[in-house]
Length: 576
Image 1 (cartoon, helix red, strand yellow):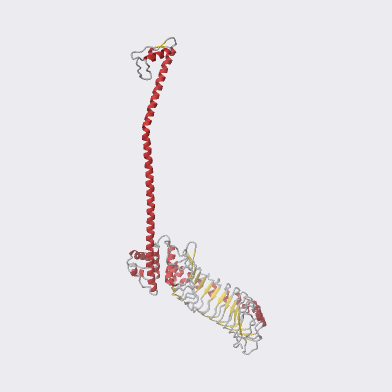
Image 2 (spheres, rainbow, N blue to C red; image 1 turned 180 degrees about the vertical axis):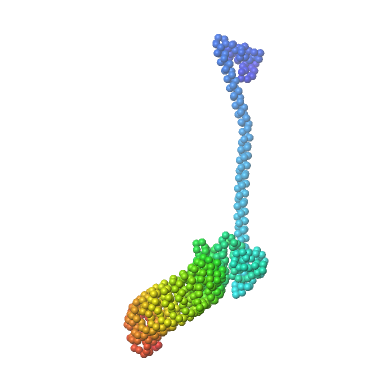
């Protein structure tokens, strides 16, 4: 018969009946040839057999249904898998394309920036080169008109509006000048050292503002540049690194970093020393120099073309310890502000045209209590020496030679027991030397020459065992040389000529083995030259013209004989 499959519980008529009979079931087929569960009747078994059969059918139906569900889920997964794979592929492609686009964009940006920077640098270099040429043209023009600070360079930059505005801004906002840019605009373009300094800073820094955070840095630079232009810096005789007014690259260096000649700087790049002695400075000391308030040493000595006055702004220099303008052509009187230099230890204004008033030759100086060096030679200082000089108890060096000091040396003067050098040569001092001179036990050099001193040399002077130089020639000194002269064992040079010394030359002079120069000419000694002079093995010059009180005498040694090796003996007017 026909087998119709209708689900998990369907059986064929013959197969179902055969299987039922094999299992011991009696089967009745319904009108659809199916085996109804109700027609399953046990043949000889108990009722449990029919219950077991029914349970087995339910299990078979459940297993079949579960299998069909799993098959359907598998088919669904197989149908959706290609779609998921395509989505992942599209997402990966999208991410890759995005990354590549980003990398390309970054690369293009970097290349563009490099090209832009290179172009900018080239542009800056071109601009800087142009600016340097402009400054060179202006400075050359101004230096040709060095003695005419009123000459204007405005025509050279009249087309550069930005530069004109910057010059006005710098002058009116920072610097110590009261210039009205509206009424005095032409003054801003004159060839003054101040304007040249401002112009240089503006051009070389492409408009760097002095009002930025590094104001002190900029003021130092400005002050040095003004000094440079005020003293004709392009004609200086430098022996080291010049004050270069041209940068080698785009880096703006502080003068301390550029190793400008004559400068010493602190770790924080403040100028603390400026030493330009014998450097052909020509011009004046500008007040702007004293914007360098950290300066401890100012040495402008031996520049004969340095003229003008010492600016009153020097009173700002509270830290300055050395101010040396020896052998310059500075003139007028020292400013009263000088006495404000409370730290000053070394002051030398000698060989200048500076004038000190006759009624107070040490005007203001006596307040400088820390002074150890006081050089006032050849400045026409007149009058007597004030007893208040004892206020300067730290003095070690006094150089007052070449003046017109009169009267006698006051006894209070010899209370300056730290003195190591005393030079009052070529004055008009008179009177006798007091015994208090023996208090100056640290003296190594004593020069009393070319005065009008009278009397005898006090015995105390021969107790100054540290003396190396003792000159007292061209006075009216009398008396004899005592045997105590042998105590001056360090004496290397002694000039006692042109006095009225008399008596015999003591043999103890032979103990002064350090002697290199001895001049006893034009005195009134009697007797013979002591043979102990031959002990002076270091003697180079021995001058003894007219050493005795008579012109005709018998020499113990002929003057033309070289009695000491390398010694030039000059004992008479005619060696023959």
